[in-house]
Amino acid sequence: GAVVSQHPSWVICKSGTSVKIECRSLDFQATTMFWYRQFPKQSLMLMATSNEGSKATYEQGVEKDKFLINHASLTLSTLTVTSAHPEDSSFYICSATEEAGGTYNEQFFGPGTRLTVL
Amino acid sequence: LAKTTQPISMDSYEGQEVNITCSHNNIATNDYITWYQQFPSQGPRFIIQGYKTKVTNEVASLFIPADRKSSTLSLPRVSLSDTAVYYCLVAGDAGNMLTFGGGTRLMVKP
Image (cartoon, rainbow over all chains, first blue to last red; front, top):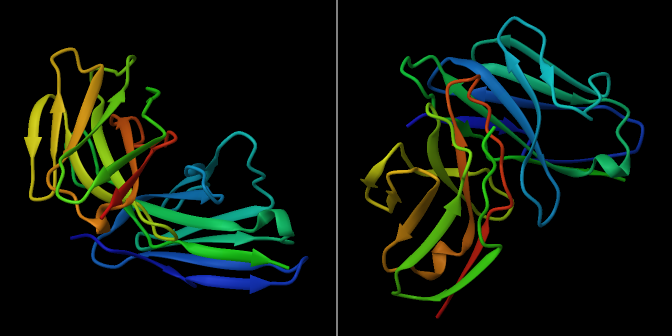
């Protein structure tokens, strides 16, 4: 089956620093990747949708200058949390779909990245 | 996007069959119904997907009535390792964007 990886799996950083999270599709080409954020005991909230080679589309309320998304290739998307603050501490999950044709493409989720900002 | 409504939590015992029902009254014609399972600190894992009637795979069955306004995930003979949050989602081909509802927290007891 399709596999999506994330790196790092967890990260601790100081307030004010920037953190980059990578999302890779290991055995397929991902035309679209999604970034979600999940706070404890809550559901996943979609942050942005990114298509290879184009600018990401951010959901309402998500600061595009704070959460920089780059989808430079069909197998890699990165999320950079700039000037992180404690309220940015969360579980960040990416997902990817491949160009499979048909009317619906399944999303494959990564294992998530736990970010803790001190 | 079709909104989904699920019970917040359910309890069951090992060996029992568990049925989790999801309401999606404004499902669109091109929407599929997909269920995901999520363990703590892990990404969601695909369980099953369907469009109408009944779908069965090695881990679950999905029942969808003719009006498609609801669906029921059936987990046969659950074990302790099935304790997780189960999400019902509906999505079509419009960018494949998924909107997660609250999910159902299933607790399987010995």
